[in-house]
Each structure stands twice: as structure tokens, then as C-alpha cells.
Image (tube, each protein chain N blue to C red):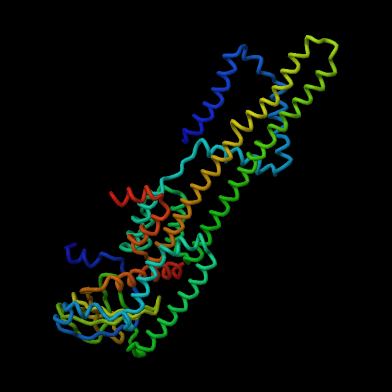
Amino acid sequence: MDIASLVGFLLGIGIIVAAIATGGDIMLFVNVPSLLIVLGGTFGVSLMRIPLSDFLRSFAILGKTFMNKSEDPASLIEDAVRLADVARKNGLLALESEEISNDFMKKGVNLCVDGHDPAFVKKMLQQEIDLMVSRNEAGQNMWKGVGDLAPAMGMIGTLVGLVQMLANMSDPASIGPAMAVALLTTLYGAIVANCFALPMVDKLANVLSYEKTNRELILDTISGIQEGMNPKVLEALLNSYLSEKKRLNNEEE
Amino acid sequence: MNTEQQERRRFFRIEDKVNLVYKVVDENTVTALSHVSDDLLSNCSLAAALDAMSQEARIIGARLEKNQPEIFEYLKIIDTKINLLAQALTMQGNQFGEHDSRDVNISASGLAFAADEELQPGRFLEIRIMLTSCMAVIVAYGKVIYCQRNEEGGDYPYFVGVDYVNMKDDDRELLIKHVVKKQMQQIRESK
């Protein structure tokens, strides 16, 4: 689980709520029709922008920002070196009984064990990486759209509130509260966009880049195994995926 | 399994058919290291040397592929051309006859092959093997570990087991790659 996403979200919302609470009655900031305009309107219009399947999938992709289980590339390299050594010393079929925690690596190794041509294996795995990227980008676009639409829907809500307020100018005492409620939709829209949707888009981009790099590392691993590459050479090749700091740490060890 | 047998089984073995010639040599020839480190440009070590260079180049190549894919593709074509030239040179200079193809059990640590003469365990051989997967010729020295009657008969009445002696790392790498490639091919064919 990516604790940073959860802590960041709770902290952001918590500080706003705390600031509101110190200034008076928190219930002043709760207005169900405004919430409905912002949330319902944003998701409704989002449905117009993208296919239903992408809309539904975007919620699952959003889960990645909270339940991100990306592996450390250093441990993937360790596995790669071990598997390359096994393939050279005991043959490709011996890989079948090796323990592999990463599903993508397991899939690649199974293709090796099945004796598929290296070019075919590379093409298959590369295609899977490309599809993963495109699925995740569709999810990112959906949440980026939410980030754009929520403030706009907030503005629409405010305008609706203002029209209703101006239509009822006979009671001057009600103008203040009505104006406050009208402005709430702008606030909700700004909160949805800036405290949730847009940060999540950046986080998703980060998670995607990390996952893509890991998968490319695995792709090189599988190609190396199929070539019978020396484990030390393979390790040197894969180390280019590590940050300079991590590389230096590994060399010191 | 005793240590000697374990040592022999350090690398995976496959059944294969390769071009192979050998001659009996004395122990001094085998242990003299100057004989092992062949001239880089001799036919026999050319493929191994090129392969070793390719391994080094692969590390830089992976970075280049990401940053400048067009240049990488161009260099790959040049690399293929060099390999083809090396193979042509190897083919020209090899000493194999039409009937040197024989069944072997090959690994990166030893070799068992069908032979037409009895070779006593302990004797030393100079072996030339042409690997069909990369058209490379490997010259290796080996010590006969066993020699037994070939039950299957055929052209060769004996089956000789040899352990490589003082094998160059580049040649061993080439053999490992050949074995992995060949195994992949055998798995595909068995389906």
C-alpha cells in the first residue's frame, strides 16, 4: 500500500476541515445540492467524454495510487541474475521450478520454457507493456478530465445559486446565506480538482512510469536469458535501470 | 555423485549434431597457455571475440536504443554485416570435411562424441567444433574421461567423453549460448 497517497489526501482534507472548524459552524459548509451539482455533474459530463468501459476502469486504475505494489528494481535484478544462472547451468526447463514473485517476469519465463522464438517473446511482452501504458493513460486522462471539469461544474453551481438568489431579492435577509450557499459549489469544485483529482493524475503518471521501467527491465531479462547471457553481463546491463545512488550502494555491497 | 562427475555436470547438456574433428595431442600442448590464447584474428577465435565485444556493446546499446533508436537500428545492421563477414571467413578457413558431422552430447564443461577409434581415458585431444547456431568454430583442448562401445553401432563404434581443459572464457560463453539456443529449438520441435 502506498501510504503517502492516503496520508497526503487525509492531511489535505483534514487541514481544510480544521480551518473551517476553527472559524465557526462546520455545517455551514455542507450543502447537499451543491455537492450533487459538483460530483454528479462532473462524473456525468465525464461519461460523455469517454467510453463507459474506460470510465469504470479508471476507478480500478485510481486504486493503484493507494494500493501501489511496485517492486524494487534491485530485487528484480537479483531475480534476473539468479534465473540467468539457472538457465545456463541447468537448462531452460529448470526455470519452471524456480520461484518468481513478479507476474510479468513469470509470464516471460513461461514463454522461455515453452521454447518460443526470442523475437516472438520480445514482441509479446512489448505489446503487453504498450497495452498497460495505454490502459493507464486512459485512466489518467479520465482523472485529468475530472480535475478540469470539477471547478467548471462548481462555477455552474454558483451561477445557478446566484440566479436563484437574484430571483428572490424581496427578502434582503436571505441574500447573505443564499450567496454563501451559491459560493459553496465553487469551493467543492476547487477541492475535488486540487485536493484529489489533479494530485492523483500526477501520482498515476509516477506509478505508471515506475511500472513501465520495471517491465522494460524484465523484458531485457527475458531476452538475456534466451541468449544465454552471462549473469554478470546481464547484471551490468540491468543496473542501468537503477538510479546512480542505488547503483553505487550495490557496488559497495 | 562424486566431485568429478558434479564438475562435469556444471552446465546443461544437450544432444546435438555438429561438425567435429579432433587429434590426439600430448599433455604439454594442452597445458601451455600460449596455445590457448589464440590470435584474435584467427578463424577459430573470431566468432568468440566478436561475441564478447557484442556483450560489452549491449550495455551501451540498451541506452542508445532508448535515446536514439534510428542510430541504434543502423548500428545493428552494421553489426549483422560484420557477423556475416566473420561467418564467411570462418567457412573459408575451416578444415571440416563432408563426413565430419557427428552426434554429440555437448555442454560448456564437456563433450561426448561418437568416434571411430578407441581413446584411452587420460589422453588429451585438440577438438575443433563448428557450432551451427552461430557458424562459429571453437578450438578446445580436452581430456578423455571415458571411452565406451557405441551400442547403437553406425559409422562410429566408440563413444568418448571429454572434459575441456584450459578453455577460454569467450569460447565457453559461445558454447553456453549455443546450448541455450539449441535447447529452445529442441523444445519447439518437440511440440
